[in-house]
Amino acid sequence: MKNRLPDKKIALLIIIVSLAFFLVMGNYLVGQSFLPYTQADTEAKVDTTTRPKTEIKTAEASLAKTTKQVSDGPLIALTFDDGPSKTVTPVLLNELRKRGVVVTFFVLGNRAEKYSNIILEAYQDGNQIAIHGYDHKYKFTTLSDKDLLWQVDNTEDIVENITGQRPNAVRPPYGAINITTAAKIDIPCVLWNVDTRDWASRNADKVANHIVSHAKDGSIILLHDTFSTSVLGAIKAIDILSAKGYKFVTIDQLFAAEGVQFVSGTIYPEK
Ligand SMILES: [Zn+2]
Figure 1: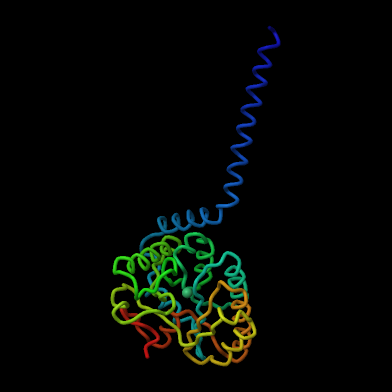
Figure 2: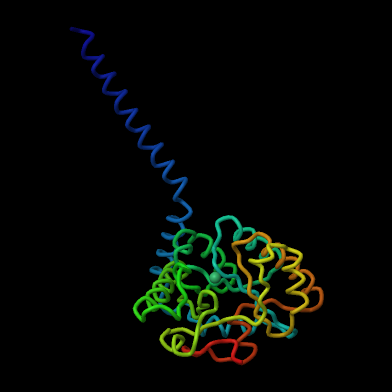
């Protein structure tokens, strides 16, 4: 009888220790797989709620700020659609940071939800975060008004929740847009004037050569940060063109430098 009480105590202790162990390990494992999303999401939410309203960057404020930073010289806006990619976009961000270069991302809502930490990182580096719709499944021109607004507004909300700034440009998937559809969207549509066809070649040298041979002041270059060849090609082109005096800017910065006003219902670049 004397020994039974300590036995029970030991058994209870083992159960408590085991439970604590599984609880800690469970949290650790869940934390490992979901930390990048939840952490960034929480930070972004905390950031926007604690930041005084007057300090929230408006598109206008950021335009005014960025205009000053843009120096003379031929300006090029590199734009990356369809991301972020878990593996490719961080490589691009790292290379851009090393060179002090900024670009514009036209992100998908469903990917932004998944990789909000990458969006936040890109935004904090000074890149512009614009949108490309929620899931890339449909051409905007084929959608009902309700579905069209959902693709756009929902993705705007997702990005704003991450960065604290509402996107001010959309690039419709496949570039499928017309005046009637553009008029239904509350933000301007921005297409491109140089198509690298990077998705077709999947060849870094071809991508780089295309950018270098078509580059001129005001170029808006279409790329995808879902292919590592596109990123390698873009970086190569940045190095070649930087040496020739070209400056790389966001769409916001390019339009500000050109004196182009962002107007909803308009399709840019205007022909
Ligand atoms: Zn796309």
